[in-house]
Structure formats: structure tokens, C-alpha cells
Length: 217
Image 1 (cartoon, one colour):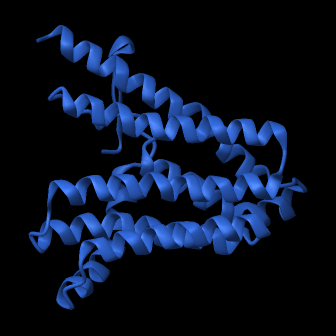
Image 2: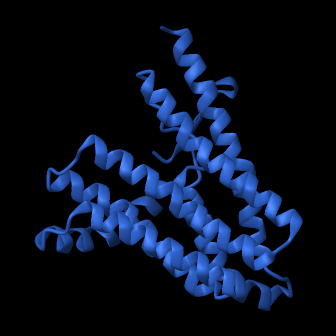
């Protein structure tokens, strides 16, 4: 899920988030998942909670409370992991559950980006955010289209976990960074640029991946 693939350049399994980071995050989430399973929480409840925290994050960004917004994004990301885990472990997985989760994830991302856009109210940043949202949606769309063709397509540099990590880290560490280096919202702007570029690169990676797979059929 977290690896990229560059067939033209012979670079395989390029990762932004390494295994140590992923395993550490899953170790934190696991006890929460166990607790939710024990009280039989339905996965859809967790999915909706994730959307709620994303909306809260967007509102906090809009009002300039970046630290709290970053924490809310992390909680939303945990919900995104937990709903799938709950569905698998409680045997409540279903085709509808999969499309419901995927759809809510897209709304969640847009809610966060809208909050950031509203805070800055700047033409250049708004353009970059539109690019970031476009790349994020196309990353999901290309995977769905590939799977519709019977091709697994979970590759790419800037997938959802990376996007969540970039924006949350920038929000949480932004104020201390600006205070030390005398900058103004540098990290969050950098995160927006990175997502705007790399999310679209990921969409292109997936298109090329599908093209290469189809050539082999």
C-alpha cells in the first residue's frame, strides 16, 4: 500500500513512509482496535467518526488552530485504519462497506483541504490545493479503474497515508519551526506543494503501471 514503482527507471518499492513508521503506527492503533472489537462497534460508525474528525480539522485550519487541526487529522487517520481492521476481524466486510469507506475518505480529504484554503485565502495557495485535491482524487480513481480491469494498483509515492502524514506533521510542527527559523507557515505551504506535485505523479504512475500490465496480457 505504501510503495511506489518506477518501471521506466528500474526503481522498485520506493517508499516515503518506511516500514518502521508503519509498524509503529499500527502498534498504537492495535489496542484501540481490540477495544472497539470487544464492544462490537460497527465499522461504519468508525468511518463516520473519521469523517467528523476531518471536518473538525478543516474548521480548525480555517480558524488558524493548526496544532489541534493536525491532531484531528491523526485521529481521522486512525479511524481510517480501524474501520477496515474492524470489518475484517468482525467479518462484516461487504462490497457496500468498501465503496462507503472509499467515498467517505474522499470527502474527508476535501474537508481538510477546504479548511486550509479558507485560512490562507490566497490565489496561489488555492491553486495548489486544487491541484492537491485533483491528484488525491485521481489517485483513488485510477486504482478503482485498474481494479475494474482486474489489475491490482496500490503503488505510488503519495498515497493517502503519506498525504495524511505530510499535512498533519506540517500542522503540528509548523509553529515551532516558524518560531525557530523566522518563517511564516513554511511547513504547511511545503506540504501543500509536495502533495500537489506528488499526488499527481502518483496518479500518472498508476496509469503507466496499468498500461504496462495490459501490455503483458
